[in-house]
Image (cartoon, rainbow over all chains, first blue to last red):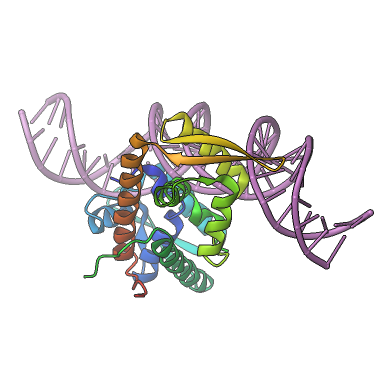
Length: 112
Length: 112
DNA sequence: TAATATACCTAATTTTCTTATGTATATAAT
DNA sequence: ATTATATACATAAGAAAATTAGGTATATTA
């Protein structure tokens, strides 16, 4: 787990990237996917995730689809058409930002 | 200029990296150096910078040396011996974090 | 002489997150 | 059977970290 301050400001970008690549995902699924992909290094907290999802929906970037799975509720989120462009911009901006930080901090990114 | 949320959480790391590589720097100098190195893409605000410098000093990570330049005051900061280890850890953690984000967001870092 | 640059600082507010709490069902372990 | 964990949503109080705005003051350039 990284110190929490590092993760600040990346939540929206992570959500939009994951949702851009799959048709739809629900909140809990996003937390599990991020945990899995990062080997537990990034674990989204629900207190941060849900309000952000609600905000993105209110902004028209995400749309929702509530489904009943057994007796439990699942709220699927997907990127709207308007949202797709914004998602792309967000990821591109973060990519550019990372390049800048690598240069500024003189880091050598690991090559796969 | 990046949207402000991206820069959140990176300030300490930037300060500690720059100060680790030069003998000493003063606050205003740090803002100018960052602006110069990033082509204006990252511009530290004084309202964030000075309180952070004070906090790092209070924690014993930085030490200060006040100098008179003409009739103006300049407060030089340098990394203490204890601070050097913490600075290294901070930069390494951020480097690791960036690797994780590159993988998670499937980014292709530009190679110099 | 007015504007910009240098150089420090703090305080109110806002943003964004953590921590804590709440509700409820499903499954695995004891 | 019952307890713990996992699934699945949500909000609210508080903390952390930034922005915005303001303050003081000297030096330089237009």
